[in-house]
Every structure is written in structure tokens, then in C-alpha cells.
Image (cartoon, rainbow, N blue to C red):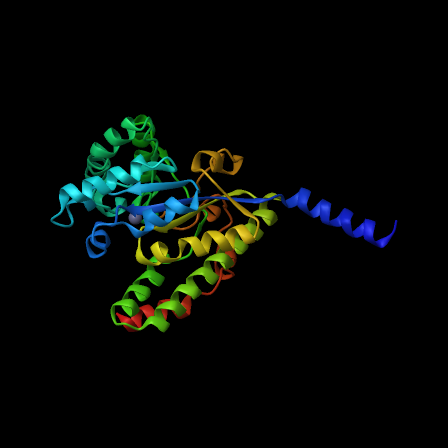
Length: 306
Ligand SMILES: [Zn+2]
């Protein structure tokens, strides 16, 4: 075998083993009505997504509609989000309560409150409201609480939505908004650049874990929020992902991956990636968590600015 042939064969093999990376993008805490009011009643994130031509799933807190005085405008904003052909609507509770603290009775009431308008607007668009995401990804303080809510969600026709990758976008966003407000443009840009770089590192990290654990790429699910940093930079993030050979897929498609049929073994209230919830060896989980991309510096800066 000559060298060129061997090299191409190896390349082909590695593509076959690993395949193309796919990711579904999910956006929580929609609609950000406070930012909407500040930005003269337009959603910069929604406008940007209009140009990107990618599917996104939005997790809605209907309580956001009443956070500012302009309830009618906020209602129209939610309607716009759900009317878009590229969005899949999901319930994220009305008031963004924490399940382990709220308890079963209050939390299930919060779920039902959270679907009133969303369900109607979704039906108008012939979109079923099937996805639910727990605020803080808090699925309960123990296995009993977890089982109770799982049964409730199933009965109500909801799929509890996992995520595999998140990159603390809310911390970056806090700093980004802080520096923007204080006219520190360079600082804001530095934070935004760091957000994109670290997010890509998280993608690469969890992709490498997938190949290690499952011998292939899996359909990843990325979790981020309706906030300023994504409004200004989601196009940059999507561009970088595409340059890295990612294709952006809908949540429905992502969930077809068999990894999502695995049992969630995690029975604590913390919002860890489903990657770890599928594992059982606690030492191994700890080891892998320690190897995640470094975000200590940004948390430190966040605390200082606070
Ligand atoms: Zn949330």
C-alpha cells in the first residue's frame, strides 16, 4: 500500500467511526421581557435567529409576560416566538420554581400554570406541546421526588428534556451586561469572545466523551438562555460550530439517538449534564467533571463584579 492510499484510508475510517457531529440548540427562559422592554420592544435574539435558518427549541416561562407593564406587547412577543416556523415550543413552568424546594404540589401547579397560553398558541401553529424542561434541571431532591414527577409528566404527555452541553452562559451574560451598561466595550467583547471559545471547548470535550463512552458521536443537546450575550453572539457561535463540522438539528431528531433511552441514575437536585446521569460509577463521574474546560476565572470575575 502506498502512503497516500493509506492516509486516505485512515481518514475515511476515522470519519466512519466518528461521523458528523450533530447538536440541537435549546433556549431557556423565553421570552426575556425585561430585555425586550429595554430594547424598545424588539427581541434581538429572535431577529438574529430569523437570519440563521436553524431549528431551535424554546423553553417558556409564561410568568415572564407579567414581569413588565407591557403585558399585551409581551404576549405578542411570545406569539412571535411560537409562530416562527423554526421553533419548537416547550414548557419551563410559569414561575421558574425549583422542584426540590417547591415540592410536588406547588411544582405541578407551576407546570400547569405554565402551559395555559403556550398550549393555545402552539395548537394554532399545529405544534404539539410535548417538551418540558425543569428549571435549574432540578429533577428532585431524591429518587422518590424524582419518580413522582416523572409519573406526572408522563401522564400529562410531557417528555422531560435532557441536555448534554451547557457552558454557564448566564455567568458570561451577567458580566457582558455589566460591562455593556458601564460602557466598557472592550471588556464586554473580551467576555463574549471567552464565552464562544469556552463553549466550543465544552462541545469538543463532550464529543470526546461520547466517542470514548459510546464509540461514536452522539446527538448533543446544548442549553443556553434568552439573554444579551446570545442575542449578540449566537450567530458567531453557530458559525464556529458549522466550521467545526457540526450540523444543527431539531430536538425531535436529536432525541432519536438511543443514548436518550438510557436510565437517568442521578437522584440529586443539581443541574448536571445527562452525560453524567447515565453513568453509575461516582469516582469516574467526579474524574470526568474535573477534566471539563476551565471556567473558574469567569466565576471569580462574576463574584468580584457582584
Ligand atoms: Zn431556566
